[in-house]
Length: 133
Image (cartoon, rainbow, N blue to C red; front, side, top):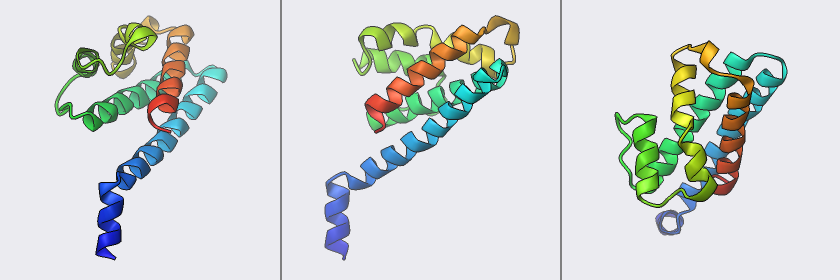
């Protein structure tokens, strides 16, 4: 039994399972954010989407051996960019995400519009599909 468990561990099965479970949980956050936005609750949607975004990015960074302890989302984004782990459109979109996250988490509701929230939701959805499926 120990050998079988070690084989699963060595094969990365445990990490793949953790990734899949994380993806499902964050998928639920995104689903709630989409529903909240559709019902006119932009602020709730912003908090849900931004919380999912930050956690997903930090988990992704940690999987690639980037220390995320006590680091801001902007620092994590910069580290991901520096290591070449995000590029193209993702890299460009990530440039605006920390500002939206800060507005949402500091209750600066007048600085966020529904298009911003929709952008975060779309980004998180695609990131989950690409990296957490």
